[in-house]
Amino acid sequence: YLQSDHKIHLHCFVGTMDDVNLFTSYFTEIKFGFTPIITRYNFLHTTIQQLELTQILSETDSPYFTPDELSSFSRCAHPGMVYSVVEMVAQLRHLPVMDVACQLRENARHVYGV
Image (cartoon, rainbow, N blue to C red; front, side, top):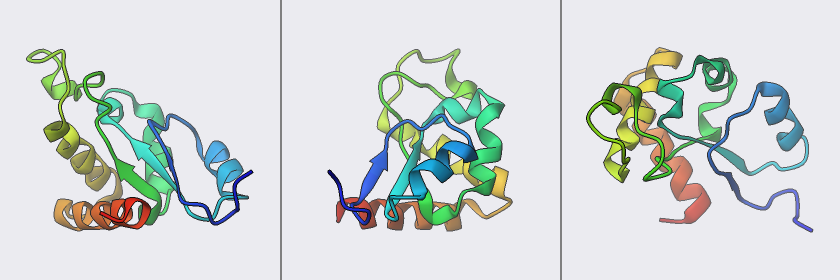
């Protein structure tokens, strides 16, 4: 049993806003992690656009998900590729990359205290 204010990082999220609403109806401190898979598949774009920026975390899920623009060069992802997630979130939300990067950093700090 988890309390409703338990801090949660929902790793490698690939859901819709209906899924988000299901989780957030109980968990108030949940964050949704997105990987470079968002550079390949458009089905997540609506979710990213509708989520509060404070609910988004960026991750790579290394070594599995390379960004689309790098997939012909590398089959193996690494932590440095997290920037492609930040760029895509910024693009989808029409925000400066640095603003998104700073907010996602704060989101990670909130969940992990680092």
